[in-house]
Length: 327
Image (cartoon, rainbow, N blue to C red):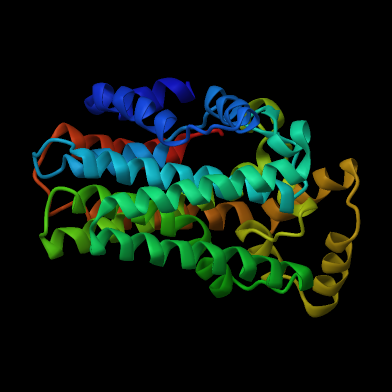
């Protein structure tokens, strides 16, 4: 079902996506055998490539063809995304991603970090090839936001004191920034219309927030078969997501302190089920679903100035896909 949905969204750029896959493989090629082995493993178990797809769809919104700058942009955002996942898996002690063993599980932390560094260096080479100060500024800004978001998350997670405002700032930097940059880079590769670029940048930001919030939902209700990772993984890595934050906001000080102490400890399997029930009872899931709807509608609204096309329809379908996905 997931593959079918992505296939439908990317249908208008099917040929371009095949060319992108070759472009990506070529841009990650190395003279070091083990690097190629690890990268081939990652590509074989590739994810949804949603950022690259968004980049290319946005490039075609104005009716122009995808060009070399578009492929460079799509390749760069995908490389940055995968590199951050490699580092995240080490930081989070994660051993499953998309239902497959992570790089750090198979090749250990040191190689996982170094291959992530290699990919970041490859992304820098791609940035240099852009030969466009506007594109370089976009990518430099997103790199800063990604780093700040990750460090801010660690800072807040240690004390379990993340409030809703801080959380939205964090997911804006850590998740939405790269999705927003993907959309903006794609459109910018084919137009200099500042109004349209501002609209598509906001579309990506809103869609990125909705995307992370859906991950928050899946983190609570998901299982390994559906989501490719164990339920409540974020609890284990000391991360509070919106359903938990909302639940905590509805507890008195004594209840809140007690639950935070509980979350800081090792939660047993049978206790996770009770925790899920408490989240539901206190409205955490319903509240998060409402926020997903809010940001989804905001994203849709930003596409109003673009002409009707199959590419615009695919972007709208991406919003619907996120609302309904189960992994």
